[in-house]
Length: 518
Image (cartoon, rainbow, N blue to C red; front, side, top):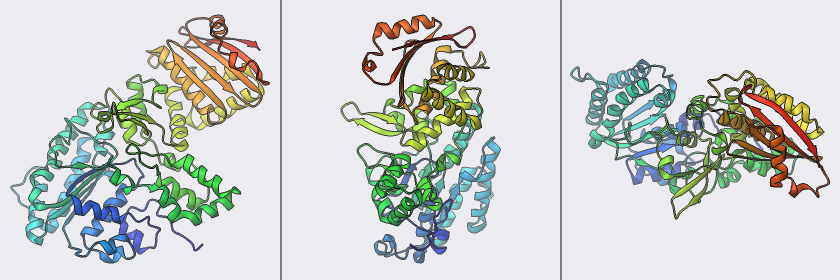
């Protein structure tokens, strides 16, 4: 196989094509997009190819036919009309204040006005935007194209600061509203982002935007489908199999387990995370590539501020309104977590129009739960992997006291502010620990009415545990026996331990555990 250049971090379509990078051809879908409508919105997780899509559209509308040689667009497009293109990328700024947004809008408007002229009577940002669109149309004789990348970044970065977010919304709403008022001068517009702020937000006046985020026809416009994986990367899979000393079908299953599983509409094929797939083939090694680029802390802040039970994140059932907008982010974190790519559609009930959400794949689940550790436990993120390794070693060797002594450290130094809802806090910490252990051993974990029951299984041991809040370890052990939690394992050849555990609200930690064998 000839040396391939993978477009990791490459967001310019022109650079990609001229420098010989690998390109998964999306131009047939792009042609369908530009020939069947004018105004679109697309939400996809970060690092999913939105910026490259925007850049490809820019090259198309600028008439750069030579860049599309050998692609589907070369055969589909005949006219190649050149249009003025206004490309606004909001991803290049950090939005700690309203001034940050003002600066980037001012910078882009000044650049466009340098090309198409300005009118001193246009004082506001939205008036200047409308004016430059009008003049570009008049000057070139062609309607303009507006491409806005990461339109929602200012709003996402200000989640939790209502005052700043309100100011940002008030600035963006009339600016984006120009897309409707200047309709006669606009040939095409696409806004992309991670989330959709609708209803009373920046989209309330933009009822002419067609949201294609959950339309089956455009599911594959970003990311890599199963068919594309084998069409473009079959040789890479073979090389990876040799590198990892595994069979091709084992490598294919690993790729699917780690990076596939994104479903942006019900009853559609899974989509692979392109960033992780490209990095895997470039390095010839599996890794948590998407997570290594950073996870926004606002996701955890939303969970904590809303006292959300972590066990309810995976498998939560929601209506369509939770998937199509995030205006209720201050009361429900699930829409933001879904649209950010940490949850995806797992099942759909057409009768009641309900969606079951879950982690898309192992990379996301393991990475997200690991990311939660320092926010809920006084354990540095750098040491959480080491601690989980020790947990696994202890349950594999039957070291029960070592296990619970270590578990105590996950509750130590917990502030009263953190445990204003003690039951929820101790359940969340246990969820994190046992979810991480679940990647290496078999775990069944359930919570109900202030208690947790748990089954841990290793090749040599079975642990049936009952956790009580503000009770006694004896009561917890008695409940295991009274409820018959251990009955399914009594004929198993492995060593069986029944363990009662109590969590004290006074010490805010595990105060005692009792072990019974058999």
